[in-house]
Length: 385
Image (cartoon, rainbow, N blue to C red):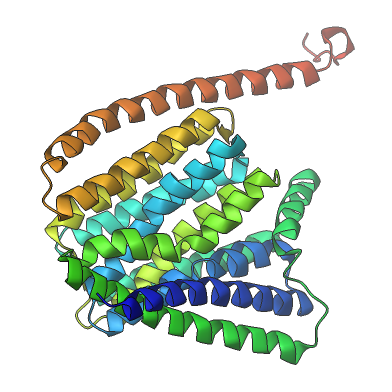
């Protein structure tokens, strides 16, 4: 591995992050100028824009025939989004979770994760599978736009507007429209160039160290393309905008599974082959991390600090096992079984705490409902009473 390869890797990562930032700012500003509601901008342009690096890298890898890098990038990014980004953000000070995310977005992410896993069981995610996934993200976006136009409760609408206003506040600038279009074009160009550099350098590194392209995609490339989500979520947690951190990750995972994977599978000649290693470990880890979000979030509508530390510890253990296994280190025979034993226990703990949180929520709702009922003496008596 030459010094030039290392430089190309760093330049590729910087270009991806910088290009994604330009794309989000320009696109959000244009959408605002055209009168598109802020909630739609935040849940589409901003959320999809932070997934642009994954799309650039996976599409480039797919067209170059490096499908292991493409698949590893997507699966690894979703794992990193939950375990690394949400874990680190929650460890800073806990994360608030809105009811909409618990009832709608996270169940959709879990459902799509199950569908992708089932699609991969035959050893590949074909072009038809990709077309179905892409149709899913189009349907979701159309439904989202229509739902935002429907009448809603005033308080809920206000909360949603405030959340998205904070997300796009810095993106909406008073600049001429041609300048904003230029930002989008430059951002897209930086994404494409960064994706090409990152894929090429990561492949060279894999060949030099004898590590599979899948492992490189799951680790170096996945974390690199998740930098926009990491920066957004951690800064949101530090600034106290903890609900934004959760929405950013959930929206990104949803777009990765349907939009990025769908487009990548359609572009790949013959679809994306899925290795036995991915079926045995990586896809189940992605699915388990998505499922774990449901009980965690039901526990008081927040991801607590200790839960964030646990998620972060699992990511460290997962990456450690990947590296040890790739290098045929004897410690892999210890770390792997240890994770296999600890994971069900942790999921059970999350399930118990989540159930207790759900029960407390139901009791609180009942208490509020009873407190709002008029006193018995003030009720109108029925004609037969």
